[in-house]
Length: 418
Ligand SMILES: Cc1ncc(COP(=O)(O)O)c(C=O)c1O
Figure 1 (tube, helix red, strand yellow):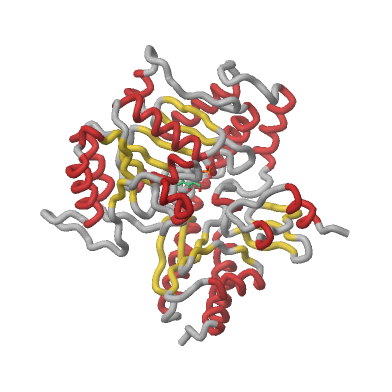
Figure 2: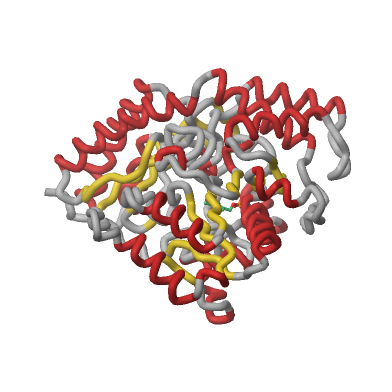
């Protein structure tokens, strides 16, 4: 009999994979911070699926909101007025401090629309981003960012405008800006401020490193944008909706932005939805000018219901605050792991958006963690720990015990342990 995986492989492509080498999981159930795999059992979900299931799996309130909308009106034209769209707009404005939302189906599309809006508003075309960055998989945003996933296409792309962001970075001092800020200033000077539409930055960078920016970076970028009439776009697709222990990562740097891009945790992954939040001045501009942006599934009613439900849960259960509290358990335990293992070089991140940095390839540790019951995302020497935000402190302790064992065994396998 054909297995489910082979049946699916015949006619449905797997993402980011050579099709015959893809080893997909057969997920048969999920609850809060864990999921169940056929033939294996329950594992901790340290990737929150794709860093998006912020409220946790199968939350009854989000499911109820969606079912209510499916029964009331599941499909509807983009420009129709609906109570669920108005409610979502009010919730987003209240939580982001920005005036209006433009709602897309996915994050890449949202970043593209933010860039279109920046071009319409400034009449300029260039976009600056960080070298260590990811802003999505469509051509325009792949070209702008630095992520390795652009490599097969790079030869046919324009040279990106990248801020150099080495890590660790020297601490800035009065009169000597950080290398990051100095690089941004030099780039704007070289290109000419009057040609640059926007600087696009992740609130906290996701799989490209989770590096904490130097203290002068965000405020210095804001000042640079103000000086040259450049818009500041904050991409909170990964870091937003509580993941870093604040509603949005930029709150850690206390900086206002002109446009903000949201996705992933907006619906906790229960339905596809992302968007661009527009500050008041930019939003008002389109009171009289045409907004040349639109999509068939714009502000899809069932996705809006998932977003309303998810935001209500984040609010009622105070999950951003919980992410901060539980994140401190990981911070303390990771510090012990850094002390204990010469091959654990350090830790990065905020809240429940965390990484452990090894001195060697992380694959054996990932494999051992899987045997012990945790699904652990990784890239080269970085292990990412990004569970759903409903995780409790005692559960974080248990995950840390598991990680300690996986590191002890995994680093022995590589011969890297002391
Ligand atoms: C910071 C950031 N921006 C944009 C995207 C693209 O979002 P999507 O995969 O929904 O198109 C991602 C996805 O991982 C992301 O992490």
